Length: 256
Image 1: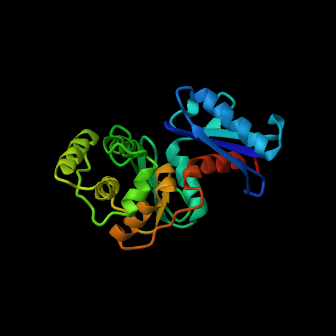
Image 2: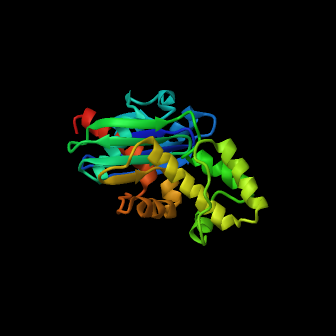
Image 3: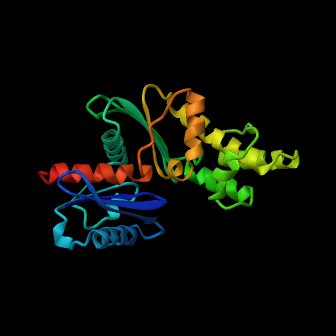
C-alpha cells in the first residue's frame, strides 16, 4: 500500500493505493493554519477507512504548497508533476490539464507519454481561482455553495473583469446598483474565471479539468465546454488528481 498526500493552501487531500493502482481510501479536509496536522489527520483517516496500520504503508510522497510540512513523507514532488501524473492517469493521451485550486490555477501540457512539456501557473493573483469565488460570494452576501445554483439559473451572463479580484468586486457593486440580479452576476463570475484561465494559456487539444473548484461547480465545466465548443474530460473526484499523482509516484518509487 502507498500513500499520496497533496497539502494545498486551502485543502489537504490523501489517497491510498494498492499494488494494482486501485484506490483503497481517500480523505480531504481544510488545510487550516497547521499543514503538519492537516497531513497527519489525512493520513490517519485514510488508514482508518482502509483498516490498516502505519507499517502497512510502504511509501509516502507529499505534494502541494505545504509538502515540506509532511514529516512522515519518504519523498516530495512538485504540484506540476503530481497533477500531470494524476490527470494523465485518467486520460492517458497528450492533453492539457487545467487545475483550478483554492489559491492558484495551473495549465499543464503533457505529451503522449504523460511527460509535462510546459505549464503556466498563477499563484500571485486570486483571479481564476477558488479564492476569487470566495471573495465574490462574500460581495454578493451568499454562501460559496450557492454560486453553482445561482449561475446555473441565470438568464444571461454579466460581463466582468478578469484581472483583479479587488476591481471585480467594485464592478459587482456597480452591477448591483444598476439592478443586475445575483444569478446573472454569479454566471458572470464563472465567466471571469474562464477568461482568466484561457488568458494563461490557450487550451488546445484534449482538456482535462481537475481541482476542487470544478468538483464543487460542475456548471463551470459546462460553461468551459460552451466557450471552447468541445467536450472536456472531468475525472471522478477531480480534486484528488494531485494526491493520486503523488500516490502513483510513490508506487513507482517503492518498486510496485
